[in-house]
Image 1 (cartoon, helix red, strand yellow):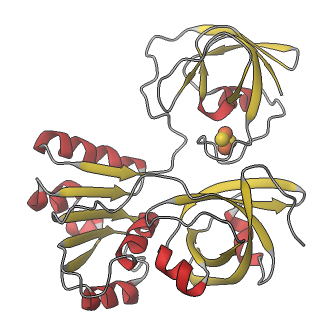
Image 2 (cartoon, rainbow, N blue to C red):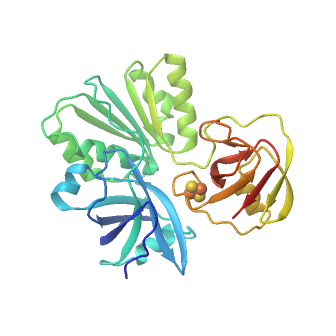
Length: 319
Ligand code: FES
């Protein structure tokens, strides 16, 4: 059955679902006509209707625009979790079913420069890099090194990486395990001064960002996390939030979404990181801060996203 039309979303048909390694699913999707073609490294929000509830999560597209053009498919490689609100349902999807996807988003792209690039991937953070590598024409000699961390025997796409090393003479890769090979600082140290791209868990990003700053190395990174991207105010303060007529005291250290969920209020939410817009809510009055940019709202009525908003004054909200 076709999913309902949703503002800002597109439909995509499931072409195949494959469990490609333990706890990991490959989805091939055929997007509807008019879906704006992505650039390798971008992500999208995927929405499933699970028992009547729309659940959204964000995933990097693990295939290139060239694959979309040639085969009309998009590939998602997703680590599943037994209790994941969305990922636990992926392996039950079947060919021909429809889902919603957002337009492609994100600025984590392969630099145009011919300078040497070092890609550092942690776990499922390999996905933007595999899309980028597939977007490079065969025979291209630009120097690219991939350092890929995963647990023992848990590296994805080994065969594909070996094939890419043959078709791209400038490409080399190393499969690393933290216990055996040491941490990212050790792996990256020989490559200071080159352009670094990083995708993986939060801890990896922090470590690499620190090293990049110390060594004056250019760094671009991508990570999906509900963690605000600007520092929270260290000075804790409390404010009154009125939500659908009910009043609560909340502090300025967490997002409005986190507070309302903790107060067991009915809220719509999906990605938790400002992408899907499911948590949109009308702010009647009060000032909030966008946790991604640090920008303050004005005091008037406007639509805000609860998952990326923190209070800076008393606020009144209506769902
Ligand atoms: S939950 Fe997706 S934008 Fe807020």
